[in-house]
Amino acid sequence: MEKIRYATKEDALKIAIVNVYTWKTQYSGLMPEEVIDERVNTVTQMAEKIKARMDEDNKCIVLEVDNTIIGFCRYGKSRNEEYKNCGEIYALYLLKGFSKRGYGRKLFEKAVEDLKADGFERMIINCLKGNPTLDFYKHMGGEVVGKDALKINEDILEEDVLLFNI
Image 1 (cartoon, rainbow, N blue to C red):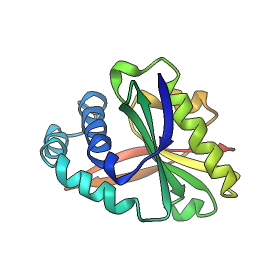
Image 2 (image 1 turned 90 degrees about the vertical axis):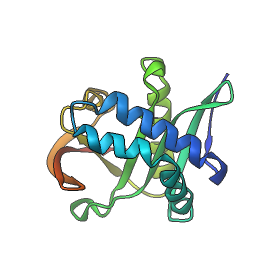
Image 3 (image 1 turned 30 degrees about the vertical axis):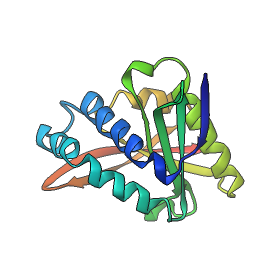
Image 4 (image 1 turned 60 degrees about the horizontal axis):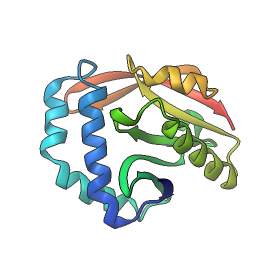
């Protein structure tokens, strides 16, 4: 049985675990391994940051299968100055073993529904260069409109910026 619902602070550690697992399985080879390992080693601190973010003006939904969180999506107003009148999906992560079942689409569509209800007509997503999820975002209607730089520690990574009309 699957269910999408708004995340609560009690979900923070589970969301952090999904985040870390997804980084390990999705981003290995796309970013330095020490960056990924640092994330693994600080999962409890990440959970605390997630709890704190829940008080901000953004939303987080989780997708449960058999009462277990297998994916999440965090979204809200765009943080990109070039797209300040847009919504943004900040993070959409799904455990690798659950891909290709429509779960990512369901999280995406719920986020779009909420962003539309908040008055946004367009949204952006940043996608790490080389991430195969780029094809999914293009399939969902995104168009690569630019590049952005993501600084993690001392590393500068390139991201594609996708724009969606919602």
